[in-house]
Image (cartoon, rainbow, N blue to C red; front, side):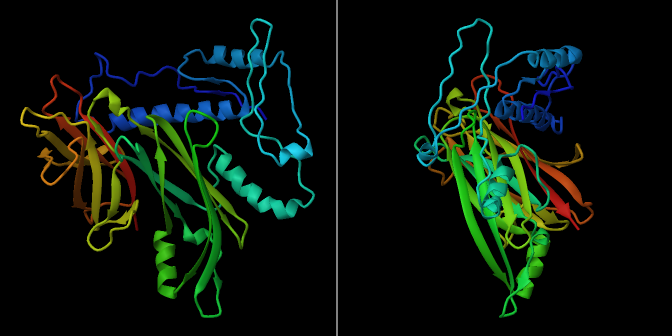
Length: 390
């Protein structure tokens, strides 16, 4: 099926204008810009993968619909069915050349495949692949993805550090002979760049056996899998993850976009922000309770050096709820002592969530300013979303 997409929001200025200049006090200007652009990327991705067209940043909605309708007036549909022997050899490169002026070639980025003789045996694996390939979220097993990037140096490049959390309440646990609760599930994760072919993948089956105490904790906090996937180039990436429960056959999926900045441009940047429980609990998390301590860490990248070789970067943190600032810290200088790579400064801190905070979605924003920059640069911003639960 071919899907054509259009963004009815039209052309929206996401940059600073004379009427609307950016200030540090604007709570989520950067987050809104990122969200707007990523939602457009999702529309474009759906169209690209199904052979359709995508129209964004266009105020002429009627004209956009007319363009889509005109695209359906005339076309050639070409299919290719490989012989059985070639199917076992893997993918083959196909090329289509057009000689008539004005013709354009679009294609499906996936394959249509005939149902196997034993469809039931192959169905489970196909359902998991279909779930992770779909641009839509499947909520039958609730899955949450939290992805941040950090820079590992010129040789390795950026690394996407992802926390995949499964809502254990959506898995079917059975009592084992020793009294422990047992569940078995599969995880499949893919990362996409600008091309339709996945850049990296992760696939594994798990069987967990939980005591009563561990089972109750899993129901409260979920089951977590950490993934680290390297990427070599700057740009926008999409991570897709899917989970299939063996006992119930239910499938769930989630996706997230993350942008890796081009550090070769020399501008100050802040890496993704890692959140974890404070104190003895150092595990990566995105869900907390009011009154808890939240630890966080990130990198300040591309700081300029003073004549004596030292950087001078000031950072401050702010907490937001529903676009409203709940508090902002005073600017704090980054201490470079003991750090060997001054182009990749590591910053860590923590804060306590007030007991009066209500359950809901919250955003931690980090703003970094380079005081050694030769000319005035806009502060580098980065955000991390998390949830406060009952």
